[in-house]
Image 1 (tube, helix red, strand yellow):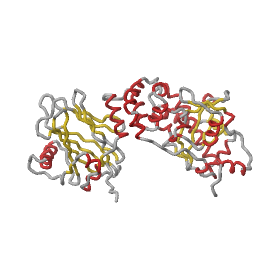
Image 2 (cartoon, rainbow, N blue to C red; image 1 turned 180 degrees about the horizontal axis):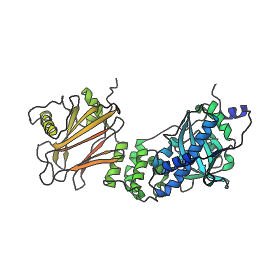
Image 3 (cartoon, one colour; image 1 turned 30 degrees about the horizontal axis):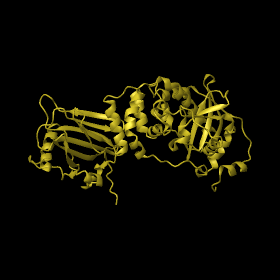
Image 4 (tube, rainbow, N blue to C red; image 1 turned 90 degrees about the vertical axis):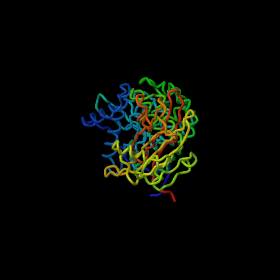
Length: 448
């Protein structure tokens, strides 16, 4: 079937309209909705998420009963990600075949207005081909699929009436704007091509986030209270930058759940650096190659890692370090590759060794590890207040310091992640002086 516009398609439709769809909720669906809502620990958001979960489960049943050839995928929907489920009062990014849908759950439609979150209209990542109005009659254990409209219709209405958002980042539109023939949506999903409803192109800019990094460092910790909302603290532009980065949304969610073990400021600073800074590709070390960033920052490759007597050159010093690692029962496989960098911290010459290798696992084939050894280039003990910190997109993974009793010549730490995970390494002194290295990533495929 050739592509046609929504207007042409509607004019060509000629079919009997069935009554509004009513889905009676089962005990299993109610229990599943409770399970979904319990994934967030914020009590003030659980009811909202519960209602949206009922809407989703009933809508999926309605689609399956009416048109079982459709492929429905809710795993990437905002409802299934607790941070987004709390922040967005809709079920966005529901995938049906190649269409994006957004479910707008409401109680009984006694009002002639419906509230729609601004984010699902004005932020490209969360826009939808179809916006579906779903009445959740929780006391009657029933859900009604009431109507729908397209992104194109919503956009045209917004321009026509000069629709303005409210201060809490919502729009109010009349329910009469929705097409109250839900079965017509089935025909669109069955025969229309997604290209017929143009959505705004994605434009996630790390530069925009980098430009407001210092502002977010000041503002985001103010969201510590579970009752705080993004719109109460941030401007709309700042809010867009946060909500288009799932890692930041999850950071705020964990902040409000008091689940940050380490310094809030350090955790947020590390996350923002992970999201905005270019990364070193440690995977190329397996090919005895450095990427351009590593070369610019004067990293040096180590040769094949085999034990040898201790010497003072960086290469032979590391071979001595390997002996110490073996005594700690840390084995480095022969296929591992490493590099090192020398730098100054308050006049102290430090040397960081980084070693990586691909972890072989049948259950998870794409795992890698990063082993870090921090010492001094002058081979003296490390400063007593030195700390080594490693973070990923979920927060600070670990922080280790020098033993005050005996002093340390080296600090050792090791982390493991998937190929799509990055690690940020920070080295600091107690007086706040800090060196933050570019993130380490792992992509062993060579680009020819």
